[in-house]
Image 1 (spheres, rainbow, N blue to C red):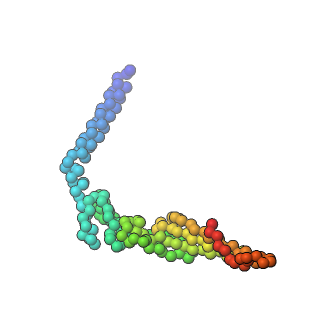
Image 2: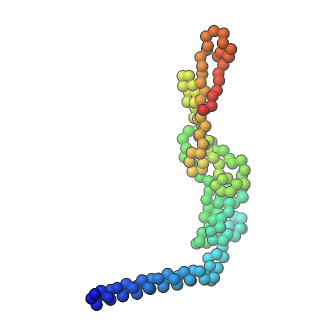
Length: 163
């Protein structure tokens, strides 16, 4: 090997050693009690409730369905229920328990659609969450059977069958 290539290998070795030492020093500094104490014991205060939160802690404001979280910048972040853009005849269905945590306390949205055919009627109900994601579909199809010929018991009675 030439002298130039030995110096290049030696230079790379020292750079690698310096990089490893820096990574070790950062790990030790962040693991020290003084650093952890300043990060873990920093608090945010929710002005509405007066509740103090540690960094990363979150809670749902009672009766409001708003999730409040303390960020590392010591600012509060608030998540609220969204109203999705849905097509059709839709209405909000409030949760059965208003004291659930966010997002379980957000209303669901029920959209109904009825299609009338010659011999049947299709009644479709779709349920969406606050983000507009489809959660459930209920389809009811009603068939109309024409009058029967002769003396048949139950002739002309409309019957419903859920599909």
